[in-house]
Length: 136
Image 1 (cartoon, rainbow, N blue to C red):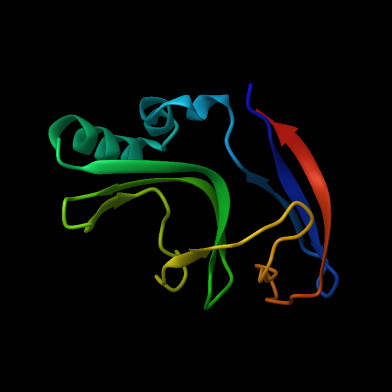
Image 2: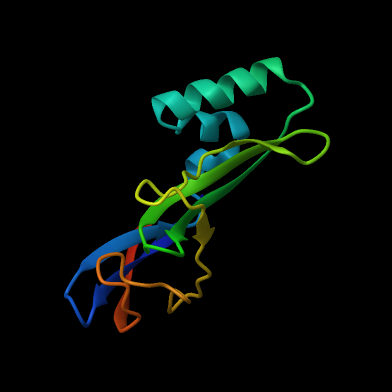
């Protein structure tokens, strides 16, 4: 059985708070299961690529936090990527920032803290963390 966790954070400057999931749950046991978790448009694109492009190499990872370096917007999602034989990206489940269209970077985390994370509301790094939920 798989269990993973989440973090709760609160910005000590503006009061914004949220919780983010990290890791894999039991649904991440196969690529097909992970593709089925994608939203409709992403599911269609990934599923078509999976069924029709035998040269596409898929990889997937559990839930992570991806943050825009410019405006600090956040996407808490799992990663599914497909690349061709030249390592060109054909598909990614991580969206570019909806505000400024820049790519989001994966935030590094430990069991106690999210590193280099900024408040998505005010961009402060003056944050408090506590362990969140356990999920599967």
